[in-house]
Image 1 (tube, rainbow, N blue to C red):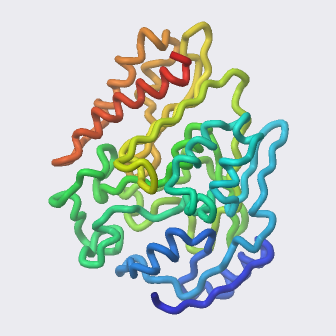
Image 2 (tube, helix red, strand yellow; image 1 turned 120 degrees about the vertical axis):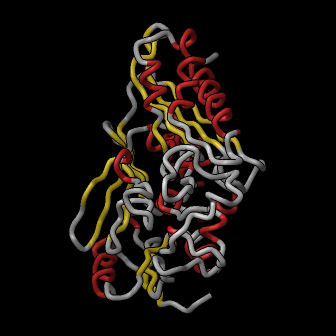
Image 3 (cartoon, rainbow, N blue to C red; image 1 turned 30 degrees about the horizontal axis):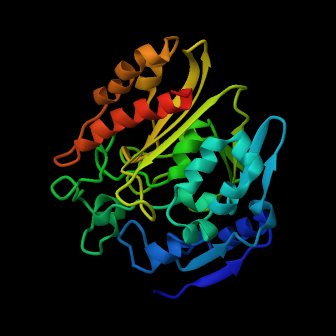
Length: 332
């Protein structure tokens, strides 16, 4: 591993000041480090578009970012709260079971005990071409996507275009379904960005996966309290039972009126370069009896899918898991 300088920040303001002070160098903020240190830096994942960091700013020393606050209108979770702390929080289990289930499905108990919410949301892609040192792909500043002609069994079936990665975060899929927003701090000031607009696809900027600028970092995630009676569903399909990323994941959060879909969201992981909101499915269900419509609605995912040479199986999986997740949430 290449050497780097490490700074402990005591407050958000101090972290911002450190970003500004070292702005002329390659700087990254650090949470649990399971991806940045244990993956990107250890494996020397680099290229023209992503130099290895020279400076790391540790956010786990900022107490305000390690809190979970539940009030009457929303829930706010700090970026360095660990995934296991989310899983173990009884109030979160009652209020936001979708998030706790998604967090519990991440990796292994060891990783959940030091991996953070902010790190899970903002981790880099797991594409084996991106992570492989011999492939100078678009996302590393190169001029080709090797998944187009190579083994693309785990790659995107929706919205790939220049780069066919799939976003690896389980919690992001749940947070998108819950209409969450990210709270961001940086040299240019603070801002809030809805998860609907937080992630960036390769056509917009192939080198990035989210809206964070080099001198910004996520401080918290805020989730509005779901409406009374909201139904929640989470399903994650993976090759192995633990320590694996989703082949397909589905999150659903919706309200019903006498068996009719009133309002809600259906989101998917493992299908696109960003956590994907399946509006075609939502539109097909809105105002209709769920039991009568679910098969037709789930099949709408086929209208937006563009599978590659060896990953068409994902389209079938996505359709089946959408139907299963919604029906299980409905209690059937």
